[in-house]
Length: 249
Image (tube, rainbow, N blue to C red; front, side, top):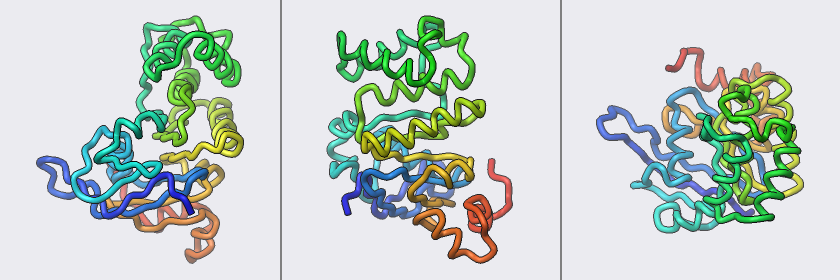
C-alpha cells in the first residue's frame, strides 16, 4: 500500500517546554484516503501538521510526504500540498476574487487558467454573487469557503485541513463536507483532517488516529475501532474513553 504521509518516531520539544509536544509518534496515511487526525487541545496535532507543512523544523525522526523527505525536500513538498489553516488566512480588505487571484499567483497560476479555476470554485461554493465584495463583509461560513478554495486552486495531491468547519453554520458545514467527499473520491486527492467534531469525523473519515500527550494511542477504521472498544457506540464515546473527561486548555 502506498502512503501519502509516513511519519516514523518523530519527537519535538519546544524551547523552554517541560514536556515534549510529540513523543515518538509514528503514523502512516494511505494514499487516496480521508484521514482524521484527532486529539484534545495540546495533544500534538498542530505540531504534526506544522512539521508536514515545513513551519516547524523536524529534528528527530522521519517524515515523508508523497515519498519526499520533510527534512531535505520541503520545497518540492510545498508544490504538492494544499494547506487550509484553522485561522482564516485571507485578506479582509480584498474581495473574495482578489484573494483567490493573489493566492493563485503565488502558486504560479496565471491568465485564463486561473480565471476559470476561480470562477469554477466560486460557483461550486455558492460565492459567485459575493465574489466582488470585501471579505470583511463575509459571514464566517463564507470566509471558511474562500479559505478552502485558496488551498486547492493549484490542484494539490494532499490537502491538509485544520478544523475546516469550526464556527460555521450548518449549511456551510454540509457544503464543505460534501465537497471534501467528492474531491477525494472523484479527484483522488488525499485529505488529512483535524477536528473536534467527532460526529463529523466519524461520517467523513476512512481512517482516523487519536493522539494524546504527543503519542498515537489508537488508529484504524472508525467503525472497527468503535466496535472493538467495550461500551462504545460512537467515535465521540471512544474518544472520551481514551483521552479522559478532563477539560484541556
